Length: 439
Image (cartoon, rainbow, N blue to C red):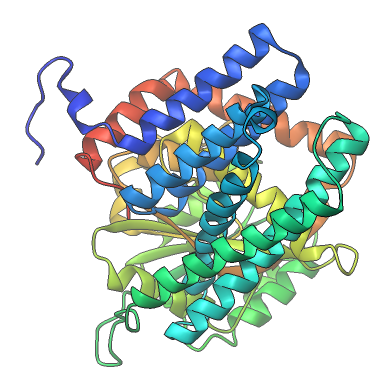
């Protein structure tokens, strides 16, 4: 148990990168007071970007380098330092593109990407080259649509691309030198936790049928599948029973009540959650089991997804934009990683500790975000980008649907911030970390 700190003593646990993040937040405020909307958008973009190392658990040195470089780049653009110092633009492209390439490679490696030294060098350089091209396209769009003083042109573009690729190669060399061996995984003989899969559903028989068919094909069978029939008027319960799932009836309409009823009924060591329209891959259950078995201090994991019914060519990009925004803003609001109900898992002991605190009777609260709030900064939650499911884009179709989701988000924030404001949550997170970056 952590010893009690004296008043003000929590400042000694401040992570250096968080100090820069605070400066980024202040920069947004300064831009709103002194400059125009373009400046506010610039520093808001920087603020979102500097949250990425926190969200993915980057090391302290990388975190500080990333945050400092991006904040400097933002201020240099706003104060027109690039005009005063011609070579500064190239230096910023060199450093920032290299850091972006390194971050992209590390996220790819988490998703079981290349791990050899040659692979680290080649893939990091390729990712950096892509980032450099996207950067130049962004500058071109900004020149045409926002500010014609943004520097573009043949020489400028080639120079930026060249140093961007060079910076990525340097980052690739560093990663190659420091490339670790294969990640430690539980051996075949290691005991894996038992998994209960909970699927809340209301009038969703067709989607549920597909979901349960995929769960029946898992390489590690769950100890049970619990379908919570949330006052359905169709054949949802019949579909669940046909696939051998346990059916729990919850007459209080709303995902919070349905999900909680399923979690209460679960018997497994770990409770995994899917929505009726989730489409898990064959290793979905085993990935959750192995990830939690490999890290006994980890309380919950959450994954990513792709919109399987969005227009072709946009399915991954739209999901990345939607979930990326959710995880970044959720991290700011929570002080730690958020949970996404379409693909998440947590230890049953963690649920037992918070089951009486979660919101159950308010259908206009996001249950997954509420659960993440209740787990609190004292428990570790990890995002596993490679752990993904297919989901339907139906939740984002229509202005009224999007407005309702946004209203639910604000309501969830208000309910939970009334209990613990965000600055207290971040303070508790810093105290938990003890000055070290989260893993």
